[in-house]
Every structure is written in C-alpha cells, then in structure tokens.
Image (cartoon, rainbow, N blue to C red; front, side, top):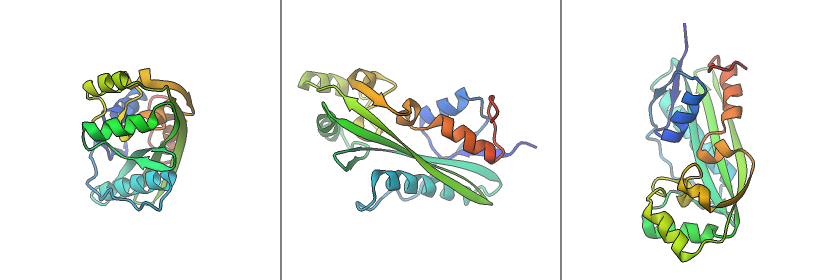
Length: 193
C-alpha cells in the first residue's frame, strides 16, 4: 500500500516541482502561526517555519508523510518577507538592487515516527536596478506573495546577475535534497533513491 504524502503548502511552484519528479501527493496548506523572532537567523527562521507547517498538518493527518517548507530572503542580515503591497515590494527590490542576498529554503519532512528538518542556502546577486526597471517589474504583479518581492522563475529572472547554489531552492523547494529524504520515509517519485 502506498503511503499518503501531503505537501503542507499552497505554492504552485512547489506543487510543480514535486509533480515534475513524479510524486503523487495531496495539498493541505498549513494555517500555523508564521510570526518569528527577529533574533533568529534566516536559516533558523526558515527551518522553524517549515517545522511548524509540517507538524500542524501532521497533527490532523497522522497516517501521512508531510512535507513543510518555507523560503526566506535576507539581505544585509535583514529578513525580507512577502511584501504587504507595491510600496513594500518597491522597497525590497531597491534594497536588493546591485547586491548579493541569500535565499534560504527550510524543509521539514515528518510522519508520526519523527521528522527530519534541513535548510538550503543559495546566494543570489541582482544587477543594479533603475527606477524604470523596478516599476516595470512591479507592473507585472509577480512580486505578490513572494519572499523578497521577486520570482526567479518568471520575469524576475531578468533581475538576476548570478546565482551560487540550488536554483530550485530559490524557487521554493530544494528538490534534490528533498527526494533523498523522502526516500528515507518510503516516499518515491519516478527516479528512485
């Protein structure tokens, strides 16, 4: 009998990445508290939020393996969440302009026997962005609901000068690490590990 596998996220990118690997899964977004202490590092924040998400969904689905994930963007030591509005997104993009920042995806994979949490940190560098570039990007509305106010897989790809690390982690899910940990939980996609 195949184990139930639940993605504790409503992210279309995470759904796409898991589907591309051949996983059969349910989607049950978590409604856990996502407030975090400013004392946490970006890595600690992403990991803690992914753990909360996985455990809150597991509490209602004890027969399943649950994958929780959270992605955090940080520049100059400051965590940038999802923008509240266009002005907030403008401020974030201006802060990222011409600089290197980190994108941290925290992952927690859990079942009733235990959990494995890990994080993946990728460095991204933006080109310097003119006011016109920022405004035209904001016009796409792609920034909405995205940590750091951009999506690397869409129009935001034009803002990126370089990336050092896992591209898929910047999209929201470090796929190659996830598939290996999922295999330890008895969850397999098309390619077996």
